[in-house]
Length: 266
Ligand SMILES: NC(=O)c1ccc[n+]([C@@H]2O[C@H](COP(=O)([O-])OP(=O)(O)OC[C@H]3O[C@@H](n4cnc5c(N)ncnc54)[C@H](OP(=O)(O)O)[C@@H]3O)[C@@H](O)[C@H]2O)c1
Image 1 (cartoon, rainbow, N blue to C red):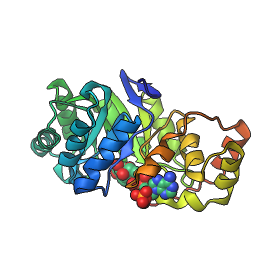
Image 2 (tube, rainbow, N blue to C red):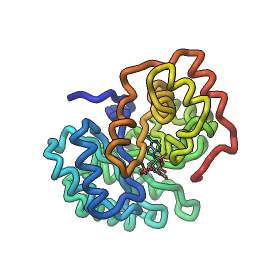
Image 3 (spheres, rainbow, N blue to C red):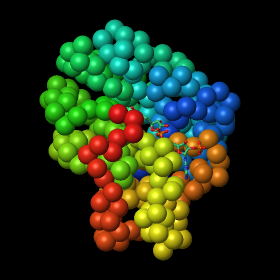
Image 4 (tube, helix red, strand yellow):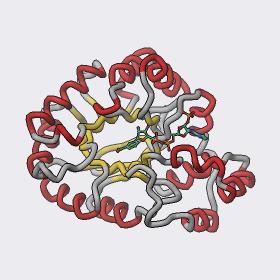
């Protein structure tokens, strides 16, 4: 089954992934297994989430072939010195029980470590086959430009907080200018969109929920979304976003919700 995806600097990234922050233990493994069985082909984890073992277990339990699933993990900001970076990335592989991940990200920038050193370590993880692709997360427009200049291997993604309530247009433009795709984390604003009257009204016209309208709004702009849920019925709800289209007027109306101070996490 081919899932809708975005291409960037040689990478093909499925537009829908399962976020796993805060999923732990057996329930994490169960949600990953179920998501993959339902058709998800992208799982987002991180060393900092302390659930890579369970993500790997869920992947194996699903029976879906390894090369059909896109696995992203991240190196935490306290591990950005080259030796720590490499150790963390290799530990992630051991925890996941994988030979390679699909995307390795710098989780957050850390101004006390020269970016050049960290980018060097990130590129090394690609050339040594630890990961197929590399990218960044929580990088500002200026940092994206600097990172792209320093990198000897192409960066393919910037994962940032993005939902209808925050304005990330500058970061999106800077990332795309450097050839990076965008992944929206916290894409349903930690569930807040559920009670949004405008998204609810637009959803009603399409037979969809407010959360589905929110996710559609993002994927319709070629933005990868990684909603997290611990409930299987919501896995299906969050995945049913590729069978309808928002009109230009609806897209514009939703864009009007954004504010420069609308971040929840960062
Ligand atoms: N790179 C970074 O720095 C960074 C930072 C934050 C997050 N992330 C990644 O992004 C992923 C998603 O972000 P997030 O977990 O912060 O927030 P989110 O996906 O926007 O929201 C998750 C919350 O929304 C609820 N929810 C899920 N589907 C729903 C639906 N259809 N209707 C109503 N509520 C729904 C979930 O509750 P239930 O579990 O009860 O369904 C959960 O409380 C994370 O899991 C992680 O993988 C990355």
